[in-house]
Image 1 (cartoon, rainbow, N blue to C red):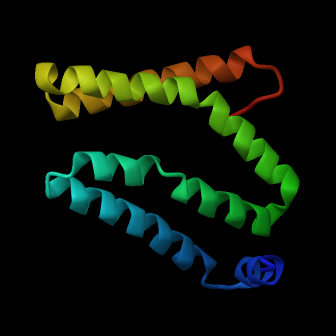
Image 2: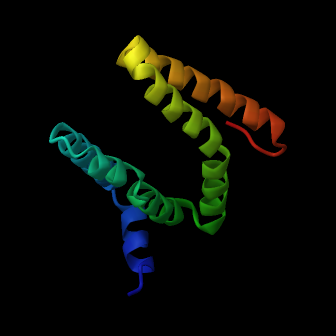
Length: 126
């Protein structure tokens, strides 16, 4: 199956942002639904399943080609350590300080670590 015609159509479509929004919203809705049903493992699996990155890779390719996909993929790797710290802080903090404070602290640490990583690695920019 050739994706090129579909990706070209999508990149030229006026509705592409709506389609992007619906794809992301579907994953978010499934995650919340299964978590609320007490199926945290399935919810986490859906969230970490590379559905969003698959869609993102395809859409980024449609918009900007292979060079933009390469830059995006490298950036994902750069942001993985800060993301792991963020998740760890939420995991360890939710029972100690509550969800809002643990999320706030986790996001703050994520941002700080991301900026530090970006400054340490030459040729990267936020």
